[in-house]
Image (cartoon, rainbow, N blue to C red; front, side, top):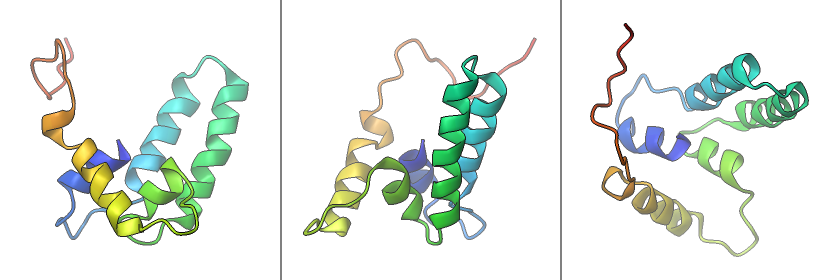
Length: 101
């Protein structure tokens, strides 16, 4: 979700890179049945949110800690390619718009 947000909102000047981690944390706090799991995720999410400054920070803080010697630009390029819309399977999904009846 974080990589997808970066891909789709890359040029959007109003995009807040903390948006996805905040939304994920809110969802998990409300809907996870396991309170301990939700609390542990909340700790993880707050760390990400506190460390995010720039647009790609959420990717590196949220997904993994870069190792010494990694070329972060190449890792980012790979993640953007891997999670590009054309590579994400949506079996059975017919619309990206949710409907409530």
